[in-house]
Image (cartoon, rainbow, N blue to C red; front, side, top):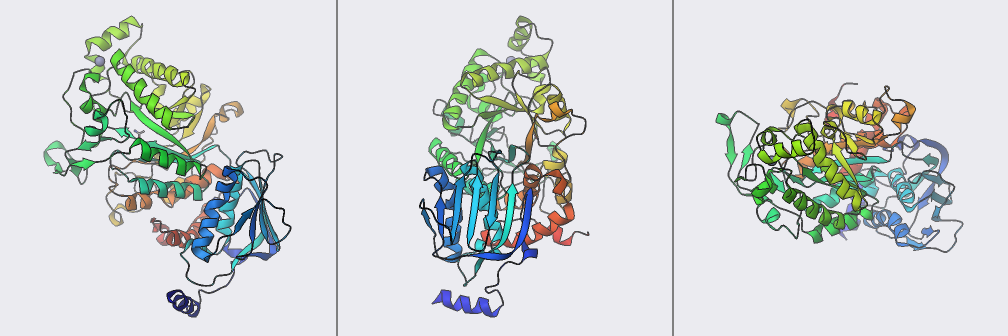
Length: 542
Ligand code: ACM
Ligand code: ZN
């Protein structure tokens, strides 16, 4: 009864049943090639989804779409492997398509065909189909919308293999339910990587069975800085005990959820710096012996891991559990912001520098990372580190994540190392995105949507061979000032959508005014799904 009443009201309000017109095609990221034809295909409750092969990955590739249709339209399409020549969405694996993530989508009046080399490509084709439907597809069932898809021919594939966002859950803990939502946001924009920043000075967030104190002690802090970062005499503290962590069972749930949306999760375990929460739990791994408290202040701290045998054993045991949990080829080992003052004043560290014939503490950090790389490679995986791992010499096979601008990325590519571009001046999504006077407190900086969108991750100074090392792009969401998931979403979007388009779409098709108009339309979809976002572009002058 309530549904009928709402349907009448919605129809009177003019929200009824019209199909999406051509000028309402607002795909993000914009496809590599698209031709719009006349006519439309209407999805009805008796339309079927036909798979070329019935395996769990193909089922996953269409499941999100079918669940959505069920929520918005009140019906679920039958999924079969029997051939159909009309009134069907045919999903076919086609080995002739060269890009593993690419797809072809053909919408004709009586048939939709999605072809791809892999189920992941089919999934992306289904995400495009989702965005071609009226925006009401993202709303819970309200009225009798006609589920019309405009006739199009799309041939699409990503520009880069790494398209992702990082979320810091250490400065502020984000519940598992939000991680699911965040993964949905990534998948919606055809991103394929979630970089999960799991350990830092202010909290250790992953259960490690061999070292229970990491979460008994390291996952909780007794106080948190209130308001803006100030000099010590002006600091105010919130003395509420704060923390949380993910059990290994919860992490397995998150990994399974991500896999069903074709997202790889790269876990990050920071070393040798940003380690105070670990040192508060196991002070014997430091140079001084402590004691330490899990930090409630933001910043860079002098106490870091001491490169003793005991520390390497600890880190290898931690990484073994992490590697057993996460199927990711890449494991992020941090490497950023490790002050060398403790190492300069530690007898063990100085003796190790002499014994190994190292020049200084930067070479000691390089020795540290190279040892960890060897261990990670012995498990069949590879390391990524922040661009500081260039200092003192790169580990032989390390991939560099360039965050202090793009200079580290350019240097690494010139040294024949793979690179992910995450330059803070474009891709730090914790920076302000509009006039700070109009915004909640943030860490600083100024990265409005146009600025993020303006970045081209292919530096002109690279040769063609060096340019092949640019694997892709990533936006980073550090959470010192982001206390909850609602604010994290607000910071993530729409800038995260710009990162997605930079990672996916050909540079030649990228155009900010056009992107901005598509995003303004996209907001109706975000509203329907229930994602928070910053709408500052509605007030931005052209
Ligand atoms: C970083 O922002 N310290 C990687
Ligand atoms: Zn030491």
